[in-house]
Length: 316
Image 1 (cartoon, one colour):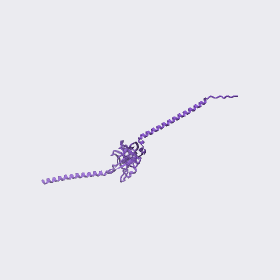
Image 2 (cartoon, helix red, strand yellow):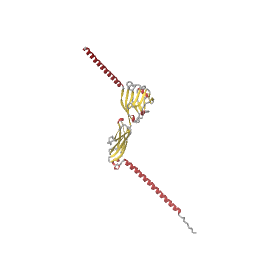
Image 3 (cartoon, helix red, strand yellow):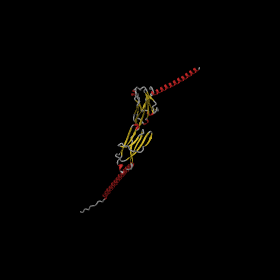
Image 4 (cartoon, helix red, strand yellow):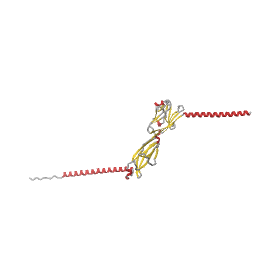
């Protein structure tokens, strides 16, 4: 009996071990299947595409196999599946039988029908705005295992800076550089036309409606050059632009030049007013002179007319 009890216990332990092993093995197989399915959902790396506001841009999405996508189901979305940019379903698409396109992209997105048989599912967005900036996906949800292309679009506003002379002080000539409505946030710097960067005050930055308004001032003194540049750099767009200003040399050396630009304009206006006043006075005096001359001539004429006739005496 003792031997039988030991045998039963042994078989019970073996049975439990086998069940545990089978459960573990099946769990492992299930995990590998799920992982394989996840790996088969091919996700292509993200690409950054840059364009200036108002321009057109092509978002690329092409199969490396070059297989036709004419009869495929393709979904373009923006910002984590929140916005339908463009949907194509075996010939039907937004603007041609399909609804649901986000208002932001309505009438601005097209595809390349003649290229679809070569695996090209790219789209074109026209008249881009800064609100088009974001992450985009091109998804083939019904393809075996799934296939998704990721990309980031950066639409930049690149206004040319406005440079002016704000005032002249004992320290030098103060220059102002203003950029209105830039996106993404740019970096500003002052430099002379030889390329040497100048010290500047802390930039004044404000943001309105997702656009940046920046003012940067610097004070320049008499150097080997009177030519200066304000440079605007947008690293996200790999773009740089600038404006140049030339400062009259006399503002550096003439003490009389140390007045504000507004004061110079006021002086010009006052001078013009005085000139007009002098011209008016000259015309007035000319008018008075002419009237006096005419009055004198009329008086002389009247005297000649009113003079009595002298009688002549004839002696016979």
